[in-house]
Each structure stands twice: as C-alpha cells, then as structure tokens.
Amino acid sequence: MIAKLLKYLFLLLVLVLVVSTISYFRGINSFNSEEGKDVRFVITQGEGVKKIGKNLADKDLIGSKFYFEIYVWRKKKETEFQAGTYNLNSRMSIVEIVEILTSGLTVRTKER
Image (tube, rainbow, N blue to C red; front, side, top):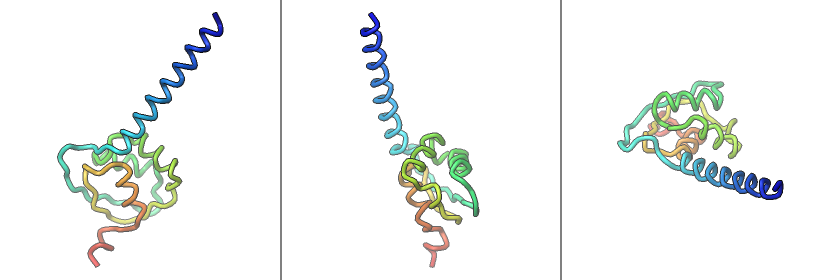
C-alpha cells in the first residue's frame, strides 16, 4: 500500500517537473504580443533584476516577470545589465531582451 502510494507520488512529482520545464522554456522563448510594437526602454544606474522585470512587464514587453527573473539568475546575468536607453520590440522573447539589455548596445551606441 505505501509502496504504491510512493510510486504515485513519484510519478506526480515527475509530471510536475516535466510540465514546469516545458512551461518555463515556452515562457522564455515566446513573445508577448502578436503585433510587434517598438518600445523605448530605459534602465537607470543601479536597477536590479526585479525592478527591470517589473518595468518590462509594465511596458508589456514580457508576459512573465517570474520567468524573466528565473532566466536571468539561471544564466548568471544579474550583474551584467547596462544602464541606458534601448529599442525593444514586443515580439522579442525574454532570451532576446536579456541579450540586448546585457550587451550595452543602447540607442546612443547605435546612433554613433
């Protein structure tokens, strides 16, 4: 009886992990809007991951602040964000947005 219960609990745990993993990868690789709109996004000196994620969500550039934070911490990019003004698009994925925001390729850099 207990062995059967443990077997079902294990299977449930595996199922939850599989669903969570699929959801995470869909979340970081999908875009937030079907129509791509360009948005100027500003990071000020000293802003942290949580604040940047909140600002991205407030501007409808990402669908999930949670997935953004997890991705940044998983990739160890939390200290790589560069202050500046960036051109982003609502059809960009979290992966693409993080790449741009950590590259330092700001609007001023592009205009030079």
